[in-house]
Length: 172
Image (spheres, helix red, strand yellow):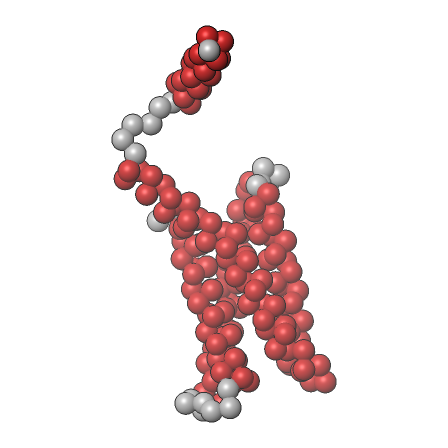
């Protein structure tokens, strides 16, 4: 299994934990009539949060290790991914600090939870989501493509077509 596939699978579980945490809190805070008890929803939210945080730390470790190996030769997409990840770390630490120590700011927690989810989705999209879409595109193209021309032959064909077009335009 490749390194990127392993990280992407972990990222899907990471996103699933984020979705579960959001749904449980939306159900807890937004529904007057619940089919599940508030205590169970809080417990599910907490477990999903622990899974989310644990996977976030593990994936971050792998990403930092990869970044150290690659050095300055990193794509713009990867830089955006890192910036979003750092923003996620800051908001997550702030959210957990408020829940644990600064109870007077609890009114901001629902908005911060939504920000954590949106940042998580963006971090996922710029890495694992991109990896799986690119892999899927390669598989789809591989199945439908008969013969691929080397780029030099494609360029030669384009030049020939452009030359013919100019010649035909001169005759008309």
